[in-house]
Length: 249
Image (tube, rainbow, N blue to C red; front, side, top):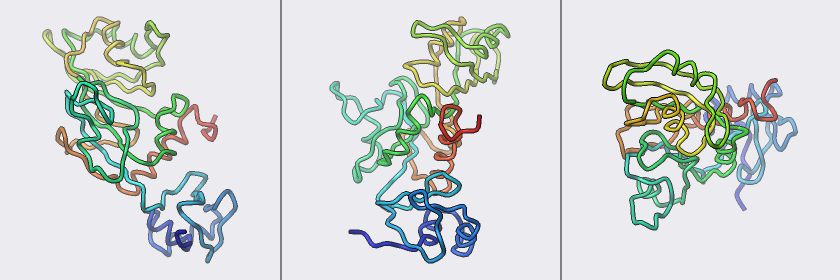
């Protein structure tokens, strides 16, 4: 059985600040263990008990890993592929075993999170807790204002209407244009279908941001581990999403 550790040590390991700063968080009554207020000197099992700051879980376990991958085109978002194509799991360390959170189509590149933290994966992947994802789409032709207006109000697709998207035209040209779209849903090929519905066939699609996570320095096929504050930011984003029971109404 893992040893119990002092709460302030667990908070510091999770990136919540120095030991002294973490002690102050405990004194202020902002830290709980399994829902009960923590006190200075308390100990907890990070693998067995839930530690939270301001109601949002703190990850102090040492067995959990979080990888941010820039998925290249041609790589499938799965652990195994019956067609023998390269997989996202094959681009990150084998141990511990991780799984992708959400998916990117084989012909879409960009940021993807892989982790063995099932709680976070469930929060991020569930449509009710869906956090925003931002994409850069290179499309054929010019981008008319009316097309952007339709994307901003929602598009009727064959599987139902989409939620409104945030849209920004990055560049306009007669041949090809670039559009940035931010959505919080995760339907299959959703961005491509939304753009096609307004007469903007997608030539190239890249996911540039997942909630608070962005990293323009990662080259296709490269990955890095998340910093503790980034893991915290993901939990915060999921808990503040409109569909989450703890989100403000």
